Length: 434
Ligand code: DSN
Image (tube, rainbow, N blue to C red):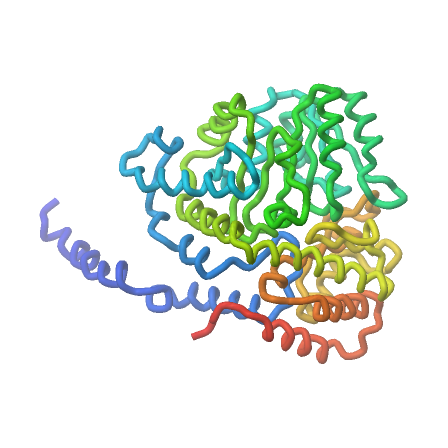
Protein backbone atom coordinates (compact mmCIF):
# COMPACT_ATOMS: atom_id res chain seq x y z
CA UNK A 1 0.00 0.00 0.00
CA UNK A 2 1.42 3.38 -0.90
CA UNK A 3 1.73 6.25 1.53
CA UNK A 4 -0.75 8.43 -0.36
CA UNK A 5 -3.51 5.91 0.35
CA UNK A 6 -2.79 6.13 4.07
CA UNK A 7 -2.35 9.90 4.24
CA UNK A 8 -5.97 10.99 4.82
CA UNK A 9 -6.30 8.55 7.69
CA UNK A 10 -2.97 9.66 9.11
CA UNK A 11 -4.01 13.30 8.82
CA UNK A 12 -7.33 12.75 10.53
CA UNK A 13 -5.62 10.82 13.27
CA UNK A 14 -3.01 13.52 13.80
CA UNK A 15 -5.67 16.20 13.79
CA UNK A 16 -7.56 14.30 16.45
CA UNK A 17 -4.63 14.34 18.85
CA UNK A 18 -5.22 17.88 19.99
CA UNK A 19 -8.69 17.04 21.27
CA UNK A 20 -7.55 13.62 22.49
CA UNK A 21 -5.05 15.11 24.92
CA UNK A 22 -6.49 18.55 25.41
CA UNK A 23 -10.27 18.42 25.56
CA UNK A 24 -12.60 17.25 28.27
CA UNK A 25 -15.74 15.18 28.19
CA UNK A 26 -18.13 18.04 27.37
CA UNK A 27 -16.26 18.76 24.15
CA UNK A 28 -15.48 15.18 23.13
CA UNK A 29 -18.67 13.33 24.02
CA UNK A 30 -21.71 15.40 24.77
CA UNK A 31 -23.96 12.36 25.13
CA UNK A 32 -21.94 10.80 27.95
CA UNK A 33 -21.24 14.20 29.50
CA UNK A 34 -24.98 14.79 29.71
CA UNK A 35 -25.53 11.42 31.42
CA UNK A 36 -22.74 12.17 33.92
CA UNK A 37 -24.35 15.50 34.70
CA UNK A 38 -27.80 13.94 35.00
CA UNK A 39 -26.51 11.29 37.42
CA UNK A 40 -24.81 13.95 39.52
CA UNK A 41 -28.07 15.91 39.62
CA UNK A 42 -30.00 12.77 40.56
CA UNK A 43 -27.61 12.11 43.40
CA UNK A 44 -27.62 15.73 44.59
CA UNK A 45 -31.40 15.95 44.87
CA UNK A 46 -32.07 12.50 46.35
CA UNK A 47 -32.09 11.05 49.86
CA UNK A 48 -29.69 8.18 49.18
CA UNK A 49 -30.23 5.25 51.53
CA UNK A 50 -28.78 2.35 49.53
CA UNK A 51 -26.60 0.59 52.08
CA UNK A 52 -23.83 -0.29 49.65
CA UNK A 53 -23.39 3.31 48.52
CA UNK A 54 -21.48 6.25 49.84
CA UNK A 55 -20.10 9.55 48.57
CA UNK A 56 -16.37 9.75 47.95
CA UNK A 57 -14.24 12.84 48.36
CA UNK A 58 -13.17 15.06 45.49
CA UNK A 59 -9.64 13.72 46.06
CA UNK A 60 -10.79 10.11 45.59
CA UNK A 61 -12.57 11.09 42.37
CA UNK A 62 -9.43 12.82 41.14
CA UNK A 63 -7.18 9.85 41.88
CA UNK A 64 -9.46 7.41 40.06
CA UNK A 65 -9.52 9.69 37.05
CA UNK A 66 -5.72 9.87 36.97
CA UNK A 67 -3.25 8.52 34.43
CA UNK A 68 -2.63 5.50 36.60
CA UNK A 69 -5.52 4.15 34.47
CA UNK A 70 -3.04 3.88 31.58
CA UNK A 71 -0.63 1.57 33.38
CA UNK A 72 -0.69 -2.21 33.20
CA UNK A 73 1.14 -4.33 35.75
CA UNK A 74 0.81 -7.90 36.88
CA UNK A 75 2.25 -9.43 40.01
CA UNK A 76 3.14 -7.57 43.18
CA UNK A 77 5.53 -4.74 44.15
CA UNK A 78 9.09 -5.79 43.38
CA UNK A 79 7.97 -8.79 41.31
CA UNK A 80 6.12 -7.50 38.24
CA UNK A 81 5.76 -8.90 34.77
CA UNK A 82 5.73 -5.47 33.09
CA UNK A 83 8.34 -2.73 33.01
CA UNK A 84 7.91 0.82 34.25
CA UNK A 85 6.29 -0.41 37.44
CA UNK A 86 8.43 1.40 40.03
CA UNK A 87 5.85 4.09 40.73
CA UNK A 88 3.01 1.58 40.70
CA UNK A 89 5.03 -0.39 43.24
CA UNK A 90 5.26 2.67 45.49
CA UNK A 91 1.53 3.27 45.11
CA UNK A 92 0.54 -0.29 45.94
CA UNK A 93 2.91 -0.41 48.92
CA UNK A 94 1.55 2.90 50.21
CA UNK A 95 -2.01 1.61 49.95
CA UNK A 96 -1.14 -1.67 51.67
CA UNK A 97 0.66 0.20 54.48
CA UNK A 98 -2.35 2.44 55.04
CA UNK A 99 -4.74 -0.53 55.07
CA UNK A 100 -2.54 -2.33 57.59
CA UNK A 101 -2.25 0.78 59.80
CA UNK A 102 -6.01 1.36 59.68
CA UNK A 103 -7.04 -2.16 60.60
CA UNK A 104 -4.08 -3.34 62.66
CA UNK A 105 -3.07 -5.95 60.08
CA UNK A 106 0.40 -6.96 58.99
CA UNK A 107 -0.63 -8.03 55.46
CA UNK A 108 -2.98 -6.48 52.92
CA UNK A 109 -3.93 -7.04 49.31
CA UNK A 110 -5.65 -4.13 47.56
CA UNK A 111 -5.84 -5.75 44.14
CA UNK A 112 -9.34 -7.34 44.24
CA UNK A 113 -11.64 -5.54 41.82
CA UNK A 114 -14.60 -6.16 44.15
CA UNK A 115 -15.62 -7.77 47.42
CA UNK A 116 -16.85 -10.84 45.56
CA UNK A 117 -13.45 -11.22 43.86
CA UNK A 118 -11.78 -10.88 47.26
CA UNK A 119 -14.00 -13.60 48.71
CA UNK A 120 -13.49 -15.91 45.75
CA UNK A 121 -9.74 -15.48 46.10
CA UNK A 122 -9.86 -16.32 49.81
CA UNK A 123 -12.00 -19.40 49.18
CA UNK A 124 -9.62 -20.63 46.50
CA UNK A 125 -6.57 -19.93 48.68
CA UNK A 126 -7.88 -21.74 51.75
CA UNK A 127 -9.96 -24.54 50.20
CA UNK A 128 -9.91 -27.27 47.61
CA UNK A 129 -12.93 -27.72 45.31
CA UNK A 130 -15.56 -29.69 47.18
CA UNK A 131 -14.38 -28.58 50.63
CA UNK A 132 -17.10 -27.67 53.08
CA UNK A 133 -17.91 -24.08 54.07
CA UNK A 134 -20.28 -22.83 56.75
CA UNK A 135 -21.65 -19.41 55.87
CA UNK A 136 -24.67 -17.28 56.56
CA UNK A 137 -27.81 -18.01 54.56
CA UNK A 138 -28.32 -15.30 51.92
CA UNK A 139 -31.94 -14.88 53.05
CA UNK A 140 -30.79 -14.23 56.60
CA UNK A 141 -28.30 -11.56 55.62
CA UNK A 142 -25.39 -13.46 54.05
CA UNK A 143 -23.84 -12.59 50.70
CA UNK A 144 -23.96 -14.21 47.27
CA UNK A 145 -20.21 -14.81 47.34
CA UNK A 146 -20.43 -16.73 50.63
CA UNK A 147 -21.92 -19.80 49.00
CA UNK A 148 -25.13 -18.93 47.19
CA UNK A 149 -26.03 -21.63 44.65
CA UNK A 150 -26.21 -18.86 42.04
CA UNK A 151 -22.58 -17.87 42.67
CA UNK A 152 -19.40 -19.77 41.81
CA UNK A 153 -18.76 -20.21 45.55
CA UNK A 154 -21.90 -22.33 45.78
CA UNK A 155 -20.97 -24.42 42.75
CA UNK A 156 -17.35 -25.24 43.61
CA UNK A 157 -17.60 -25.75 47.38
CA UNK A 158 -20.00 -27.70 49.55
CA UNK A 159 -21.97 -25.04 51.38
CA UNK A 160 -23.77 -25.40 54.68
CA UNK A 161 -25.64 -22.43 56.07
CA UNK A 162 -26.57 -20.97 59.42
CA UNK A 163 -29.44 -18.54 59.83
CA UNK A 164 -30.95 -16.27 62.42
CA UNK A 165 -33.23 -16.97 65.41
CA UNK A 166 -36.89 -16.78 64.40
CA UNK A 167 -37.81 -14.77 67.51
CA UNK A 168 -35.39 -11.85 67.41
CA UNK A 169 -33.72 -12.12 64.01
CA UNK A 170 -30.24 -12.38 65.52
CA UNK A 171 -27.54 -14.94 64.79
CA UNK A 172 -27.87 -17.79 67.30
CA UNK A 173 -24.29 -18.73 68.18
CA UNK A 174 -25.51 -22.04 69.62
CA UNK A 175 -26.98 -22.86 66.21
CA UNK A 176 -23.72 -21.86 64.53
CA UNK A 177 -21.79 -24.10 66.96
CA UNK A 178 -24.16 -27.02 66.37
CA UNK A 179 -23.89 -26.60 62.60
CA UNK A 180 -20.09 -26.41 62.82
CA UNK A 181 -19.94 -29.56 64.96
CA UNK A 182 -22.31 -31.41 62.61
CA UNK A 183 -20.68 -30.34 59.33
CA UNK A 184 -17.00 -29.90 60.32
CA UNK A 185 -16.39 -27.14 57.71
CA UNK A 186 -12.91 -26.17 56.60
CA UNK A 187 -13.97 -22.52 56.56
CA UNK A 188 -16.53 -20.53 58.55
CA UNK A 189 -17.71 -17.23 57.08
CA UNK A 190 -19.12 -14.41 59.20
CA UNK A 191 -20.54 -11.19 57.86
CA UNK A 192 -22.84 -10.46 54.97
CA UNK A 193 -24.92 -7.91 53.18
CA UNK A 194 -28.01 -7.27 55.29
CA UNK A 195 -27.36 -8.39 58.87
CA UNK A 196 -27.73 -5.22 60.96
CA UNK A 197 -26.11 -6.32 64.21
CA UNK A 198 -22.53 -6.49 65.44
CA UNK A 199 -21.09 -9.98 65.13
CA UNK A 200 -19.99 -12.00 68.15
CA UNK A 201 -16.49 -12.30 66.78
CA UNK A 202 -15.02 -14.05 69.84
CA UNK A 203 -17.72 -16.73 69.66
CA UNK A 204 -17.08 -17.27 65.93
CA UNK A 205 -13.36 -17.65 66.72
CA UNK A 206 -14.02 -20.15 69.50
CA UNK A 207 -16.28 -22.24 67.23
CA UNK A 208 -13.75 -22.17 64.39
CA UNK A 209 -11.02 -23.29 66.79
CA UNK A 210 -13.18 -26.08 68.18
CA UNK A 211 -13.82 -27.61 64.73
CA UNK A 212 -10.37 -26.66 63.38
CA UNK A 213 -11.81 -24.40 60.68
CA UNK A 214 -10.43 -21.15 59.36
CA UNK A 215 -12.49 -18.03 60.06
CA UNK A 216 -13.18 -15.47 57.33
CA UNK A 217 -14.94 -12.25 58.34
CA UNK A 218 -16.42 -10.21 55.49
CA UNK A 219 -16.81 -6.74 57.01
CA UNK A 220 -17.88 -5.02 53.78
CA UNK A 221 -20.87 -3.23 55.24
CA UNK A 222 -19.36 -2.21 58.58
CA UNK A 223 -15.68 -1.69 57.69
CA UNK A 224 -16.03 2.07 58.16
CA UNK A 225 -17.28 1.55 61.70
CA UNK A 226 -14.32 -0.71 62.43
CA UNK A 227 -11.93 1.84 60.93
CA UNK A 228 -13.53 4.54 63.05
CA UNK A 229 -13.23 2.50 66.24
CA UNK A 230 -17.00 2.15 66.70
CA UNK A 231 -17.17 -1.63 66.23
CA UNK A 232 -14.73 -4.37 67.28
CA UNK A 233 -11.99 -5.17 64.83
CA UNK A 234 -12.41 -8.55 63.07
CA UNK A 235 -8.62 -8.63 62.65
CA UNK A 236 -8.44 -9.54 66.35
CA UNK A 237 -10.34 -12.76 65.69
CA UNK A 238 -10.32 -13.86 62.05
CA UNK A 239 -7.70 -15.66 60.00
CA UNK A 240 -8.63 -13.52 57.04
CA UNK A 241 -10.79 -10.40 56.68
CA UNK A 242 -12.29 -9.20 53.41
CA UNK A 243 -14.07 -5.96 52.67
CA UNK A 244 -15.22 -3.70 49.95
CA UNK A 245 -13.65 -0.27 50.11
CA UNK A 246 -16.61 1.81 49.03
CA UNK A 247 -19.47 1.25 51.47
CA UNK A 248 -19.19 2.66 55.00
CA UNK A 249 -15.40 2.79 54.46
CA UNK A 250 -16.12 5.57 51.94
CA UNK A 251 -13.35 4.95 49.45
CA UNK A 252 -13.05 3.94 45.83
CA UNK A 253 -14.99 0.96 44.48
CA UNK A 254 -13.18 -2.32 44.91
CA UNK A 255 -12.18 -4.99 47.39
CA UNK A 256 -9.40 -5.73 49.85
CA UNK A 257 -8.04 -8.66 51.83
CA UNK A 258 -6.31 -8.40 55.23
CA UNK A 259 -4.52 -11.03 57.29
CA UNK A 260 -1.69 -11.45 59.79
CA UNK A 261 -0.38 -14.97 59.32
CA UNK A 262 2.55 -14.74 56.93
CA UNK A 263 2.15 -18.44 56.31
CA UNK A 264 -0.97 -17.56 54.30
CA UNK A 265 0.63 -14.77 52.30
CA UNK A 266 1.88 -16.69 49.29
CA UNK A 267 -1.42 -18.53 48.84
CA UNK A 268 -3.61 -15.46 49.31
CA UNK A 269 -1.59 -13.30 46.96
CA UNK A 270 -1.42 -16.02 44.30
CA UNK A 271 -5.16 -16.60 44.63
CA UNK A 272 -5.85 -12.97 43.62
CA UNK A 273 -3.17 -12.89 40.89
CA UNK A 274 -2.97 -15.05 38.86
CA UNK A 275 -5.78 -17.02 40.51
CA UNK A 276 -8.89 -14.98 39.85
CA UNK A 277 -7.60 -11.74 38.31
CA UNK A 278 -5.05 -10.36 35.90
CA UNK A 279 -3.87 -6.79 36.11
CA UNK A 280 -5.04 -4.69 39.07
CA UNK A 281 -6.84 -1.41 38.33
CA UNK A 282 -4.10 0.99 39.34
CA UNK A 283 -6.25 4.12 39.11
CA UNK A 284 -8.62 2.45 41.58
CA UNK A 285 -5.63 1.41 43.68
CA UNK A 286 -4.65 5.11 43.80
CA UNK A 287 -8.17 6.06 44.84
CA UNK A 288 -8.28 3.26 47.42
CA UNK A 289 -5.04 4.59 48.90
CA UNK A 290 -6.56 8.09 49.13
CA UNK A 291 -9.69 6.76 50.83
CA UNK A 292 -7.64 4.77 53.32
CA UNK A 293 -5.56 7.85 54.05
CA UNK A 294 -8.77 9.79 54.75
CA UNK A 295 -10.00 7.02 57.05
CA UNK A 296 -6.80 7.41 59.09
CA UNK A 297 -7.65 11.06 59.82
CA UNK A 298 -9.33 12.03 63.14
CA UNK A 299 -12.44 13.32 61.33
CA UNK A 300 -13.21 9.81 60.15
CA UNK A 301 -13.86 8.67 63.73
CA UNK A 302 -16.54 11.35 64.05
CA UNK A 303 -18.06 10.30 60.72
CA UNK A 304 -18.13 6.65 61.83
CA UNK A 305 -19.77 7.52 65.14
CA UNK A 306 -22.36 9.59 63.32
CA UNK A 307 -23.10 6.75 60.88
CA UNK A 308 -24.00 4.48 63.78
CA UNK A 309 -25.99 7.21 65.58
CA UNK A 310 -27.92 8.02 62.41
CA UNK A 311 -28.66 4.36 61.68
CA UNK A 312 -29.97 3.87 65.21
CA UNK A 313 -32.07 7.04 64.99
CA UNK A 314 -33.55 5.91 61.66
CA UNK A 315 -34.41 2.48 63.07
CA UNK A 316 -35.92 4.00 66.24
CA UNK A 317 -38.02 6.44 64.29
CA UNK A 318 -39.31 3.85 61.85
CA UNK A 319 -40.30 1.57 64.76
CA UNK A 320 -41.93 4.48 66.61
CA UNK A 321 -43.92 5.20 63.46
CA UNK A 322 -45.19 1.61 63.27
CA UNK A 323 -42.79 -0.23 60.96
CA UNK A 324 -41.23 -3.56 61.87
CA UNK A 325 -37.44 -3.37 61.97
CA UNK A 326 -35.49 -6.64 61.92
CA UNK A 327 -33.73 -7.18 65.29
CA UNK A 328 -35.50 -4.05 66.59
CA UNK A 329 -32.57 -1.85 65.69
CA UNK A 330 -29.02 -1.86 64.45
CA UNK A 331 -25.36 -1.61 65.41
CA UNK A 332 -24.18 -1.00 61.85
CA UNK A 333 -24.99 1.44 59.02
CA UNK A 334 -27.84 -0.93 57.99
CA UNK A 335 -31.52 -0.94 58.86
CA UNK A 336 -33.68 -3.79 57.55
CA UNK A 337 -37.45 -3.34 57.48
CA UNK A 338 -39.76 -6.37 57.47
CA UNK A 339 -42.82 -5.79 55.29
CA UNK A 340 -44.49 -9.16 55.80
CA UNK A 341 -47.29 -7.67 57.93
CA UNK A 342 -48.07 -5.17 55.16
CA UNK A 343 -49.74 -5.71 51.80
CA UNK A 344 -46.81 -4.20 50.00
CA UNK A 345 -43.74 -6.12 48.76
CA UNK A 346 -40.15 -4.87 48.62
CA UNK A 347 -40.25 -3.96 44.94
CA UNK A 348 -43.41 -1.89 45.21
CA UNK A 349 -42.22 -0.31 48.45
CA UNK A 350 -38.90 0.80 46.97
CA UNK A 351 -40.73 2.17 43.90
CA UNK A 352 -43.05 4.20 46.14
CA UNK A 353 -40.11 5.58 48.10
CA UNK A 354 -38.24 6.44 44.91
CA UNK A 355 -41.26 8.49 43.87
CA UNK A 356 -40.81 10.70 46.95
CA UNK A 357 -37.05 11.02 46.41
CA UNK A 358 -35.79 8.27 48.75
CA UNK A 359 -33.63 5.51 47.27
CA UNK A 360 -33.17 2.12 48.95
CA UNK A 361 -33.33 -1.52 47.85
CA UNK A 362 -35.65 -4.48 48.17
CA UNK A 363 -34.05 -7.24 50.21
CA UNK A 364 -34.82 -10.81 51.22
CA UNK A 365 -35.50 -11.39 54.90
CA UNK A 366 -35.32 -14.60 56.95
CA UNK A 367 -38.02 -17.07 55.87
CA UNK A 368 -39.12 -14.66 53.20
CA UNK A 369 -42.38 -15.88 51.66
CA UNK A 370 -41.67 -13.85 48.51
CA UNK A 371 -39.03 -14.50 45.82
CA UNK A 372 -35.83 -12.45 45.39
CA UNK A 373 -37.49 -10.55 42.53
CA UNK A 374 -40.01 -8.93 44.91
CA UNK A 375 -38.93 -9.78 48.53
CA UNK A 376 -40.57 -8.86 51.83
CA UNK A 377 -37.81 -6.59 53.06
CA UNK A 378 -36.35 -3.17 52.46
CA UNK A 379 -32.72 -2.42 53.23
CA UNK A 380 -31.56 1.06 54.19
CA UNK A 381 -28.09 2.40 54.94
CA UNK A 382 -27.08 5.83 56.16
CA UNK A 383 -23.43 6.10 55.09
CA UNK A 384 -23.97 8.23 51.99
CA UNK A 385 -26.26 10.76 53.66
CA UNK A 386 -23.99 10.89 56.70
CA UNK A 387 -21.06 11.74 54.43
CA UNK A 388 -23.16 14.62 53.10
CA UNK A 389 -23.78 15.87 56.64
CA UNK A 390 -27.18 14.52 57.68
CA UNK A 391 -27.86 14.44 61.43
CA UNK A 392 -30.32 12.82 63.76
CA UNK A 393 -33.18 15.34 63.40
CA UNK A 394 -33.22 15.08 59.60
CA UNK A 395 -32.81 11.30 59.48
CA UNK A 396 -35.77 11.00 61.86
CA UNK A 397 -37.80 13.15 59.49
CA UNK A 398 -36.79 10.79 56.67
CA UNK A 399 -37.90 7.86 58.85
CA UNK A 400 -41.31 9.49 59.26
CA UNK A 401 -41.66 9.98 55.51
CA UNK A 402 -40.75 6.33 54.93
CA UNK A 403 -43.29 5.11 57.47
CA UNK A 404 -46.03 7.42 56.20
CA UNK A 405 -45.39 6.25 52.65
CA UNK A 406 -45.31 2.52 53.42
CA UNK A 407 -48.21 2.60 55.87
CA UNK A 408 -50.47 4.45 53.46
CA UNK A 409 -50.64 7.64 55.54
CA UNK A 410 -49.11 10.00 53.01
CA UNK A 411 -51.71 12.38 51.63
CA UNK A 412 -49.54 14.70 49.54
CA UNK A 413 -46.71 12.78 47.89
CA UNK A 414 -45.70 15.65 45.64
CA UNK A 415 -45.18 17.94 48.63
CA UNK A 416 -43.01 15.31 50.36
CA UNK A 417 -41.01 14.81 47.16
CA UNK A 418 -40.32 18.54 47.10
CA UNK A 419 -39.48 18.57 50.82
CA UNK A 420 -37.08 15.63 50.48
CA UNK A 421 -35.37 17.33 47.55
CA UNK A 422 -35.05 20.53 49.51
CA UNK A 423 -33.54 18.57 52.39
CA UNK A 424 -31.08 16.75 50.11
CA UNK A 425 -29.99 19.93 48.37
CA UNK A 426 -29.36 21.44 51.78
CA UNK A 427 -26.50 19.02 52.34
CA UNK A 428 -23.09 19.33 50.79
CA UNK A 429 -22.37 17.82 47.40
CA UNK A 430 -20.00 18.34 44.47
CA UNK A 431 -20.77 21.14 42.06
CA UNK A 432 -22.27 18.93 39.35
CA UNK A 433 -23.67 21.39 36.85
CA UNK A 434 -21.64 24.01 35.21
N1 DSN B 1 -23.01 -6.57 48.03
C1 DSN B 1 -23.90 -5.67 47.35
C2 DSN B 1 -24.76 -4.94 48.32
O1 DSN B 1 -24.65 -5.16 49.51
O2 DSN B 1 -25.58 -4.12 47.89
C3 DSN B 1 -23.14 -4.71 46.47
O3 DSN B 1 -22.07 -4.11 47.13
